[in-house]
Image (cartoon, rainbow, N blue to C red; front, side):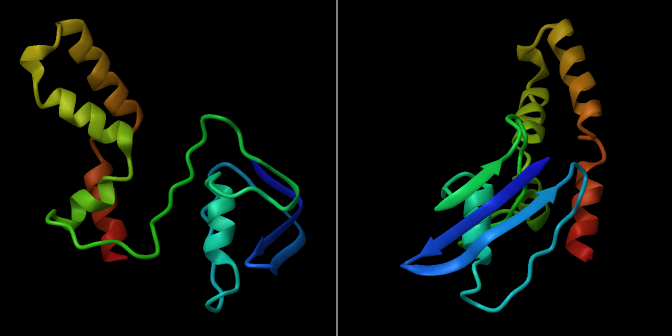
Length: 134
């Protein structure tokens, strides 16, 4: 679980959060809303580890990945479905390796297909399409 314990965050001398505490459990899907300048981006920067707390502690299990999308992105020359899937590095790594099966041993190929199944790689494009439609 991700845990904030008595966390205070400041930006430019302005207090955005003071002595805030919360827990985020595995499998939870969280939505964050607020007016501009309320501290949403600062909170995500702390969750992603690029900003430390001014006070208190933030703990996140090693090996956990926090999925997020930047507030602003540049235009890309790729299909939207590929952009949605691009956040899953392991999916793309396996996908790229499987695209060149002649460079893999039978054992490596079997392991990659097994792992791809474990991470739900075969159903990822349809789930990404649902996210886009939603």
